[in-house]
Image (tube, rainbow, N blue to C red; front, side, top):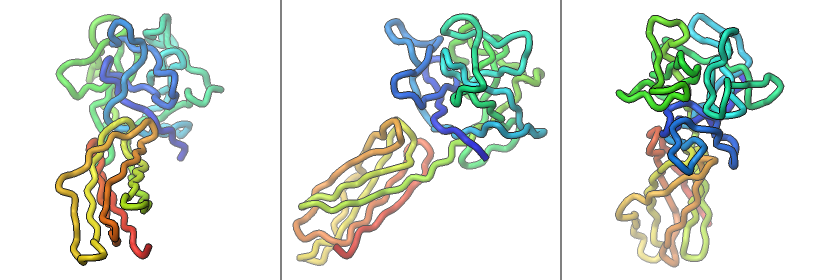
Length: 250
């Protein structure tokens, strides 16, 4: 199945937008004065595209190249309201506007988030899990109606496979984390054996790190001169996923 990562929740307008461009965060209806683009938070959603519909999935979801949100393009009468002006536009020949097929009305798994809806006013996918409903470019807040088939409760996948790479330096250990939630927070703890005393040394408190746009981080901590047999355990604070790594025999 073909999938695309880098779909994120915007904390300003509460819509789902594509965060895969470093210098283009689209146009946001909830952005404060002086800021135009979306602001990402939470999970990194990985969404299927160009696959057939089922009884519990809906296609015709596309990326608007003007504002970068996910919008429903299945209505011939309207393509919604775009915060960049006019209606949303998604081009089939553009790889960021694949025809996405999204699951709805299914029980969410450990790596899924429910409560995503279609706003009937602007046609974007927005998060309906909070009492407030974000900022709609058509005016007011987003609105989704349970009796409208266009506003099913969608369930979006956010699978993660975090990993660690360890590299020993002179009295330091470098920790590289990969596959964590983008632009978010993680923690790690470590221990090692002091080669002179034979005692195990552990960090007194977790080390907090912030991941970059690719879900990676690099951190270092000081070690004893004759340190050996390192063990590092890290946890993604958004998803709760964890991973471990060992370095021995150097």
